[in-house]
Length: 127
Picture 1: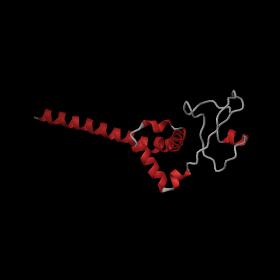
Picture 2: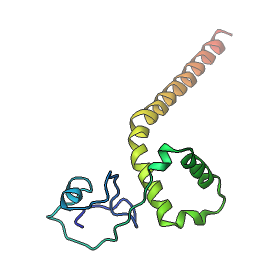
Picture 3: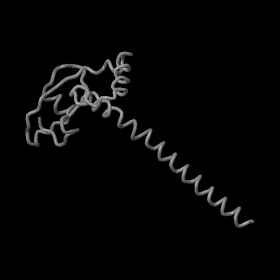
Picture 4: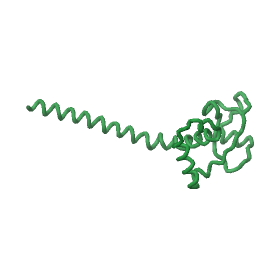
């Protein structure tokens, strides 16, 4: 596979696919393969993860993973792939919707502190 960057140390590229067929078109269009880059061998793995989104069993699984006090569960390659896939899907939502709300909240908090300090200074000057 010819790719310019890695998602992590173990995962070179990750994407969803409705089929099990992997051909050059899939690698070029979906996986971001670039024929001009140096080719390197990779181990291709597939994990059926649609059940996480579509079934109650998936929500229970994610809650169990989060609640597990044992960090060894995160060493399992399938768990790493599922987490990377979910992060890839949720990153855009976090960056475009949640993060701006946090920035706006910070500005309101800073404005409240500044206005409060100005009000306190004004009260001290009047007394």
